[in-house]
Length: 488
Image (cartoon, rainbow, N blue to C red; front, side, top):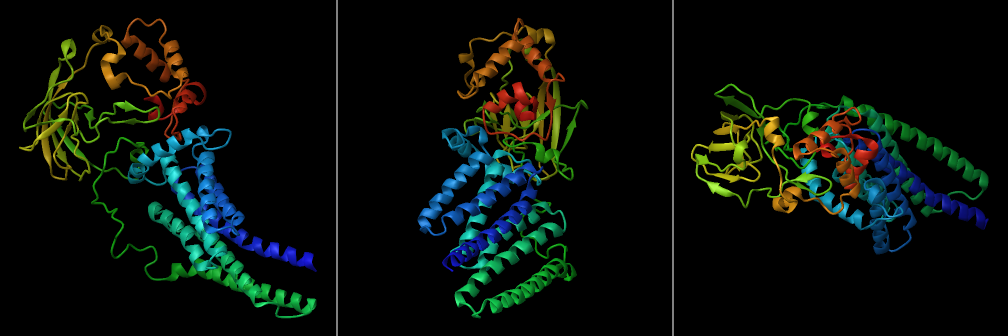
């Protein structure tokens, strides 16, 4: 009799675990749609189940201990699922903490500029893993500790609703059905717990079996009715899939466009529609590369700017006659006059222009200019209707001129020749191997370029970036498939 009661108690304790696991899995599957490919969704599902498992294992412990265990579990999950290359025998290391810190610095920028479904870049994958972990962990805590199934449903359902908002991919009855089934399982588990607290309603085994059979039939019928109603009734309501009366999302067509260099350009390449930003007119009728930013710092993983806001740049009155960073025999070329008309509000102050600029006229406004980066900045973000003119020099050196260029010691060029300490020595050895026998820097650069554009290497937009300096070595020796992060 005691053994039977122990087995029943274990079974009763496993019911909330099974229901919460089903809810966590449905949440991860629905939320994983914000990423491209199946692998990110699988990793989110693993994180969701791990969060529930940690909550179940610490259910009978103090809340402080359970919270600490959940935090440790989250760190381990991030190590396994997002930053596996930083693990030390499967455990978090200092490299893991540095990778998390680096991703935290970029998560806001990537979330602001990426278009869903987006590649699972480490900052976004980290944020998604934390969100799924927090939602599923709190759901189990609310169900098992607080005995509140309705509150337990809110965090996972909110994540699924967030995916619906950012994707706008229409009705997805499969995900809705999975969430409804999991929600019914959560309510059922809590209901059975409450019934057990009332005690037995019959004395004999026959009566108990009869009562369970009747209850099971009733549960199945009510559950099936609720599932059908939840899937079909919303489509019958007025306003289903209609535009909102008041749009509070802040994502309307009049929003400013931000040109952010610190994240992948996949979001721009994969846009559903083209956004006209500028109209450029040149007096000579010649096209050029309209340069906006220059990324001069490499941290072993990503390219960034040393002076993001040009705070150290000099201010020039308009029309601004700008100093050139190109001197000597290469500082020649035909002039190129450009007139820029802004067609869409931009969230940046940087001025697109052909490089190198010599004169910038903002119609009376001052210009901030950094000669080392060759970048100019307006006092305020550019808005639709703004216009400015630029005089640039079309510097097109010949191969003979480039072949004659010689460089001094690396120390003479400061950050332009700096590499982080964690860049593997293997990368330097590969560069020396590829450029062996080339007499000039220009020919060495051409040798590296020829190797990268050969059939040996493949340029792909579907590569998942890794927040690790060793990713470059793996790209050069193993994968040989990369995006601009690797090829640059």
